[in-house]
Figure 1 (cartoon, rainbow, N blue to C red):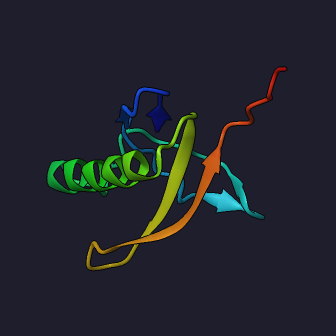
Figure 2: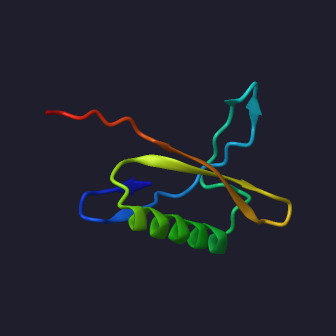
Figure 3: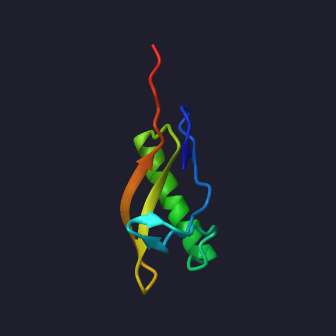
Length: 86
């Protein structure tokens, strides 16, 4: 996700990070082979709308889990570090 100071937020797609060992990602694949075009569009639009609503201005990732039925569940958001300058 990227958000600017003018209220514009965009998403850059998703990554599949299911293959892990000891909580470390071993393989990341983009686009995810288990997310279809409709899910990709809907989820991206929902996240963009939410981040625009809160005035998000940074780069970051929003993480979800998907169940066997294709339902998505929010886990966390990780923002890029941003230093403040005087």
